[in-house]
Structures are given as structure tokens and as C-alpha cells.
Amino acid sequence: MKKKYLNYLLLCVCNTIVYAQTSGIGKTVTLTYDDGIIAKNKWYNIEDKIDSLKTYYKTGELNESFYYDEKGKFHGLCTQQDKKGKQLTSWKFEHGKLKERIDHEKVYNSKNKEQRLKRYQIIEKSNLRLKDKFYFSAMISRAYARSFLGNSVLAERDFFIIKNRFEKYKENPKTAKYITAKKMASVYDVIASQYARYEDEDRAIHFKYLALKTNPTEGRLVYNLGSYLIMMKSYKLGIHYLNKVIQKAPKHPFANWALGIAHADLENYELALTHINTAYLNEKSINKLSIGTAERDLITMKGYLQHKLGDSELGIQNLNEALDINSDNSFAMRYLGEVYYDLENYEKACDLLTKAKESGYEKKHDRDDLQYFIDQACFEVENNYVALKDLPSLAPNPVVNYTEVVNYPYQNFKFQIADYNSTIVLQGTADGTTINVSTLKPGLYILLLENGENPISIKLIKE
Figure 1 (spheres, helix red, strand yellow):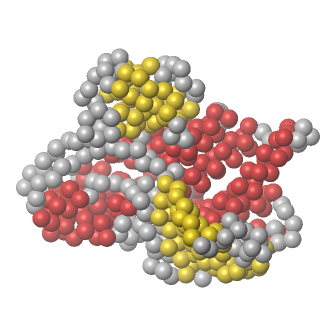
Figure 2 (cartoon, rainbow, N blue to C red):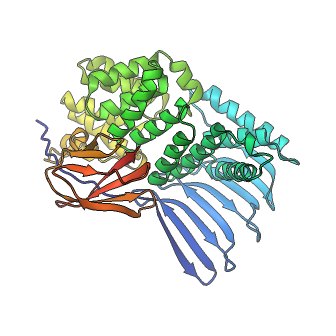
């Protein structure tokens, strides 16, 4: 059975949606992920004070539940559970004060055990220090540890307390000198992470770029922006920033890891494996500093790329090892399914690809490249496949004055450019395929094209 690749364009502007429903007892405010799955629900009483809040995993299962008193402070028993409904952590609050935290189960795997247990300890020690007095260092340590462990509601609260303190100090002439560019940039970067958590990607990129502009010499911020752009599938833009990191630190493990993922998606398999192998040279740093739950971890990527470059036996071995480490790794399932599909073992391919779908691959990773292989392996019907490398993009990007739309079948087309708040700031007609953006201020923008059947959006950074 041969694969047929029928390229088509299906891109749209996707933003986190915020909407409210009002009833006789108050209102409900809902935020959704890009695919419409509920990310967060907030309930308010008739006096417009928050009453309760729930967050959800990208696959739709309940994650956290928090409750508030009449003054909007945490109150009562608040909980976090895993995707199967098993309780992980509970917090007991009394009018804003944390009385008790119980970790019913500490979640980790063989690679991230040390780092996750360390974060549990940091939270425990920080809670004791902050019990009766505010310590900035303890608040910062706790905020990052909470974020690391996925306690998103409490991490967000801590980070915004830090942000408000920084801004207050910056306004006071006596304390302004203590708020360095590095500290302020870190605040912006953290805010970006909070937006990114719920897939409000335009605001997330805006604040990551603002962090970089505030402290342009910090390589970590360059990496953070580049890797997030890769995650959001703005590959060429992300590669631009990650290459800057590599120029200064050729063996940077995280930048090479992210570049390996980007080039794998763009089907540059040899280059992708080169970056993954470079990242492997410092795998200990990745295991030490990362959360350890990424499904496209090094061994998963290596296994897939080895298959694509002709060593399917070793590729299968590594992908099976990835599943031994994390049996719910839907990317390893999807890649291994593709391997067996390419080897014409359709029964195994169908089983693995179906398991990847059931494990939430499409929802967790916002990808639509699975159904094609399921249809082919399980039902042997013709379908269309989107080749990411053939989608429209901009060159150059980031842009100084002019950029060209490539892989786009139209010329002299009309366009609009919106800022990160979705406000149209520029519109006009292209000169052939070239667009003049010289009047824009530096920052993140979204280029909108509406020629043809499907609208297209491309992220653009003006320098």
C-alpha cells in the first residue's frame, strides 16, 4: 500500500477564548484551549467575588479545584488530581492562610525522580518560612517549585505577588535601583509562562519577546522564546532564535533538543538527529533541569529519527524503551505506529496509532497528523496529509522592513497584520509576494491572509 500526500492549507487564527455566562447567583467565566476544550472555569457570586475555580488538563479531565471565602481568599479543602481522577495533593486553607498541604502521591518517573522530589521538599520548607512572615526568596523558590510540579493555580498566585512587588519597588526611587533588567525580564518571562499554560499563545510570545528586549544579553530568554515558538509550530521563527543560542553555545542541550524536534517536523532528518545526538552529550543537565514529562524526550526522538534514516531495528528498540519509561507517552506510540506502518506491519501500526489517539495525542499536542495513518493502517482508505515543511511562511522572519510570503500560490494579495491583542495595526496589498512592515514598532504580530478557501495566520516578529 502506497502513501498519497495531497498537500492542502488549513490554518486558522486560534486564541484562548474568554466568555462569561450570567445567572441569578452570579457568573461563570470560562477559558478554553485552542481546540475548544475547557482550560479553566471561574465561578463568581452575585457580588462579583470569586467563589470557586477549576482547571482542566488539555485532554479535558479535571485537574485542580479551589474554593474562596467572601473576600476572595482561598478557603476550605482544595485539591489536585491526575487524569484518572486519583487525588495527588490537597491543601487546607483558612481565609487565605495555608494550614496544611498533603501530598497523597508524589508523581515521578525514573528520569525525573530526583528533581521532582527536590521540588516537593522546596515547597515544604518554603511553606514553613512563609507561615507567619513574607520572605521574598522563599516566595520565589516556592513559585517555581509549584510550577514545576503542575500546581498551576498556586504558582500563578505566587508569581503575580512577585510581579506586583517588583512593580511597586520600581516606582519607589529608594528601591528602584534594586529592580535590575535581569529581575524585570524574569518577571515578564514568568508571566509569559502563565499565559502559555492555557495556550494564550500570542500574549505568551509577546511577554517572552518583551523579556528578551528588557534583558537582551541573557541567553536563557533567547532559548525560551525560540523553544516556545517551536512548540507553537512557528518553526522558522523559532529556529532563528535557537540558532542564536547555538552560535554562542554549540552544545547547549536544550537548544539542540528543540532544534532536533523542529527539524524532525520539517523532515530534515539528518540535521534533526545531529542536534538530538548533541543534546545527548549533556543528557544529565536535561534530566536535572527539565520537568521530565516531555513526550518527545531524547530517546523518543532518537528512535524515530533512526528509523527515518534507515535503522528501523534500533529505532524500534529506542521507542520501546521510551514506552518503558513512560507507558502513556503518546508521541512514542504515534512514532512507533508510523515505523510499523512504513514496514507494512499494519496490524501493529493500527494498534499503536489507535492507542496514541486514545491517550490524547491530538489534544495534548494540538496535532492533526495522526488520523491519516490510522485511516491508512486500519481501514486502508485514501486521506490527505499536511506536510508542515510546505506550509506558507515568511522570509526573513524576524523582519526589519520587508518580508516575503513563501509557499503561497497568490501574488498582490490583500493582508492584515494584528498585534498580540488581536487589534489590526496594518493592512494593505502585497507587492507581488513582498510586504512592507517598516512602520510597525518592534514586537510580535500576526499576519492574516484570506485568499483561497482557508484563512492563514503566520506569526511575525518585527525587530
